[in-house]
Amino acid sequence: GAAPVHGGTCACRLAVSRLRLHGEAAGSEARAAVRRPGSALAASAGSFTQVIAILGFGSNMVPVKRFETGDGMFYQWVMCTGIFIYGVLLQIILFAHPLGTTLTDRAGGISPADIHAAAKPDAFSVKLYPSVFLGGALWATGNMMAVPVINAIGLGMGLLLWGCTNMLFGWASGRFLNHALFPSVPADALQTEWLNDVGVALVLVSLVLYTRISPAEIEPTPERIRPVSEAAPGNVLLAMPAFDSDGEDLGKPARPPPATRLLGMGLAMLSGVFYGSNFTPSTVLIASQHGSSNPLDYVFSHFTGIFCASTLYFWAYCVLMRAAPRVYPRLILPGVLSGVMWAVAQTCWFLANNAVSLSVAFPIVASGPGAVGALWGIFVFGEIRGRRNYLWLGTAISLSAVGCTFISISKGDAR
Image (cartoon, rainbow, N blue to C red; front, side, top):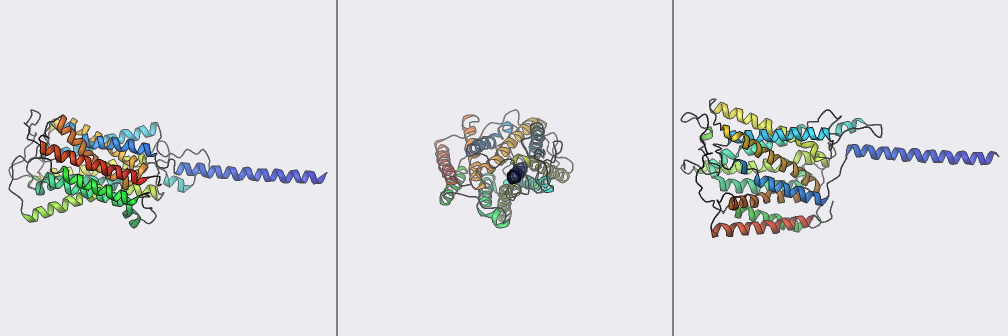
């Protein structure tokens, strides 16, 4: 009778061993899920977030269109305040319904590495990523540079230079730059790389064509009031003339000297680099698994960096203006709304980058708002008129649509 008992004992031990191994594997998978709760979003979700981002970026200036923005410094600070308010509200939503990473120990044995990678160590705290904070500060710096750039080279040339540089830098970051700088970050996987390149080239051409559109002059409205505090003569930030909400200077200053124009062109391209690199920190953290895999966990850090840098620049502006900044009280509520709309679009851009990669999402989202803004100008504000403008606009939108189609197709089934 000993042999059957021995055989049964071995079988029991084998079964227990298998159960233990299965349990350890399940625990490891569960812990991995805690560490990396959601892989890239589905392609359909990526397309949806790209559409929302394009609509948001193309429409966020609408609330302030009829209001005087002066030299833009007060507006950029109010707008960034709205961005920060949205970031706080989003973080509260994530606390109430934790879409982001939380270390709920369902499997047991959470390691220090898990805690380090998690976005929120518990349900009552938030992890601030310094590098993502820096990405937000870079965006705010590029945004602030628009003031001297427009003064030096004009709105059209400024939009062209920082728009093209922004799109190229963001696209290149996904294609090869992030991998070159951070070897642990893989380059974006594309099924048809040449199709992606052709699409980006077409989008670049469309951005150039947008600058050929000449808005019609519109009559001032009662909302375009003067600021509360006017600076004393000669007390103007960087010799900046007053601009109306269309970006046209009110004083028609003399053409800047060549050195000033070269400086303006350099600042415009540097601004585009800052715009194009603001997603790099979060992208690197996700790809290298040194942070949460959920892009929503980086939004608060990003928006906090935007607000802090914007506030710092506004303080410096107040000092340079000798405590007499150009302040427009009626701009506050529209400016905050503009910031919230921008923040919604930027959040969707975070999600789109995670869903379809930088080299696909960046050129599409960077090129789409021009068409949306132009449609607002035609059907609501009546500032784009005439056969010539319609021809340039139609050509630009067509090229952009074809380019974006090529870029989307180039992704294929690559992961």
